[in-house]
Amino acid sequence: MALGLAAKKEIVAEVSEVATRALSVAVAEYRGMEVAELTDLRVKAREQGVYLKVVRNTLAKRALADSKFADLDSALTGPLIYGFSLEAPGGAARLFKDFTKENKKLQVTALSIGSGLLGPDKLDAVAALPTRDEALAKLLATFKAPVGKFVQTINEVPAKFVRVLAAVKDTK
Image (cartoon, rainbow, N blue to C red):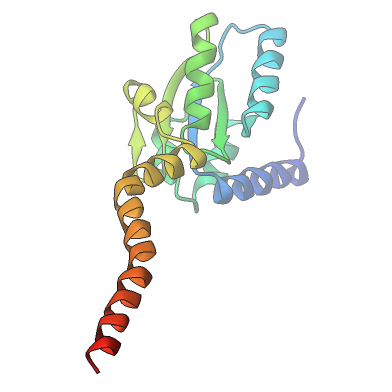
């Protein structure tokens, strides 16, 4: 079914708006997949905070042209499904990686984290990017020893200060 100009503009505006909020994007070819398989992929995407959209490549190129994902332009060929990570930088890559374990028809063709076009060989690296909570936990783990010493020092300072004051008072 042919789309009218208004519907095309609406799709471009929607994808463009999502791209401005997205942390990364993964693009995969879905040739040969059944409707039930795509539905299953969409359900998993919603659970993981990934926006999935099948869009004509010409409309996707227009939507991504002014975004940090404009570098994907050269990789947009064939029947593609676009996964935009809205909550974690590796969300869409992780979704596609996990889904391809059970469905070999889904083939990742390109990735972007906003700093250049990445090939499908980088799927594991992008999928391994931590979520916000994981990153914060790792950051706090690096502070564990120094923060512990800092807290201990703060707890000891008043006691030492009181002893010093008492010693000064006794000398008067």
